[in-house]
Image (cartoon, rainbow, N blue to C red):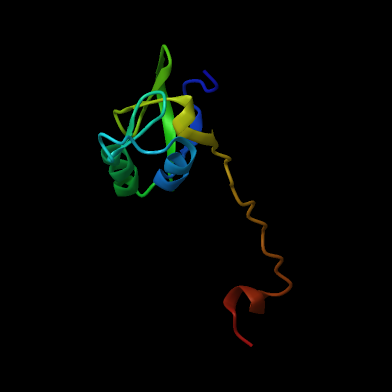
Length: 104
């Protein structure tokens, strides 16, 4: 297990999974990975509109449960840890009261 509870992880896209593992011949709606990656899982991620980033809620043997979706996820479905990209807000430099009021 690569990740721990509280980690924010990015889930691979359907195309990435299909390219890496291929679809099942008997059921083209599933990807051949450790646990099956299904069209339902893909749809649930898309409906969340979360940029494919989920938070690990619990770890159980070889799978994870995410806070946002109650499916079982495995390392092979996860692309990477999601990086927190917080922009630093720089204070504006005010040179005169006209800058504050924006009148000139």
